[in-house]
Length: 136
Image 1 (spheres, rainbow, N blue to C red):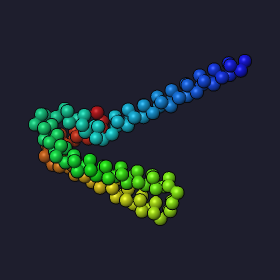
Image 2: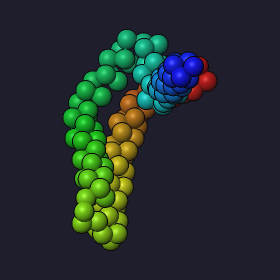
Image 3: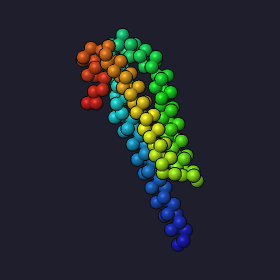
Image 4: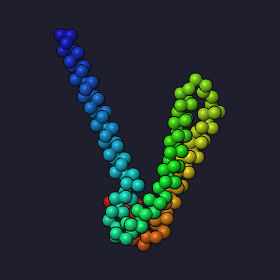
């Protein structure tokens, strides 16, 4: 009788774990599908080759600056997490680290927006409209 309960609990826990894992994978796929950058990259593939080349060149030349900024934002996020988890936690210092994280994140967003606008400056109106067309 006791082994039936154990096996029942194992099966229920296994099913629950599979449901959680499935929901996580679905969430990742959904987020990737609706992310503006993913939409833009998908739509770029449908543009004329010369425009694709220009867009890829723009991304390629400006990507190092964006990567560096994203690394700084990630480092600020890790610094904040480590500080909050540490024994010397102080609200004022944590707030300074939140401020730094916000600044780093905003800087990354500005760089990404400028890359997008540099691309949009060179595209004809119909292709600018396609760049972030979420309706597809």
